[in-house]
Image (cartoon, rainbow, N blue to C red; front, side, top):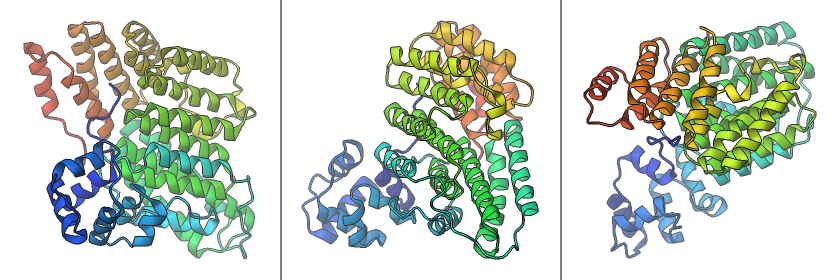
Length: 447
């Protein structure tokens, strides 16, 4: 139920969509350029996309030639990773240096940020990226800057601007805030590339860049721009590492995990969360551990692991109960008791326990203030889903209507998509369902 039905999961599917190619078009160009027998036409290409069949090297080279990717890149990266480079995405195996971080940051800003519904990196690729990040010795990739053109006052202004964006996102959603994040990224990129600064300021600049890239990725995810989110998070991992900020790096991995959970790949999400947890260690703030565990609950639910989901939830609530708020990083201000989060409640819906989900979600709603409009809509939608799981169609519709009344106050494609997905699960034959769907027809995911 958590799988995003609108998400494209294979790079070749995305490449075809970008160029307007059908399956038969790909088969024809492969046969034309390579001479391979593609008599099965579209069925063969379909298997490449949907059944993890790896094409012959000659077929890969034919596609690469068509889209302008050199043969060495095909050989070095393998299938299907090399397909990503046709869109200008940087390989994952570049050196972890400040200069590389700046280059990848600039690259993710110049890429098209409006592509929707494409999960850029597979579970194996995100695991590879996370593993590389986890092995970087803290503070070892900094380099000293000269002069003092960019001073602490400038960095403080940038940091304060980022903090204001967090709270604006809570109110109005990611579609709107993404543009503001992009403007601030341009500023930080200019400071890093053109400014002169001492090493302490440099570290703070990289830390601010990592946090802003994390935030931009979150806004892109909330806007259903999954490829853009992955690019921002890749750059954010590198810049936060340059600044020695492992907690922000762990936060980025947790968001990548959430993205895979929404895509239905709970196993990849669990692996990412394990990497984040191991990297920050037991001495990290308990609130951060509570967040990682809370999001792992839903990942276990997606793969049907009920026992593990419950065990992780108990651990999450234990971390929460023993936390010291004075130790918390500023960005985790939004975290609440794990069992009262939307992700945990949605996880119990996945596990077929709507009774538990309703109770936990309603407890969470009672704690949520008016400054969290998007979360209120998502929480109401999750409750409606749980009520539908209890065969309470009337109650589910009443709750969902409350969500619809609020949805025009936020610009979040994710919110609209969740409501539309709920509507698709309703029994179509009832008149009140048709009326509710008519109300949703007036809504559309912001573009």
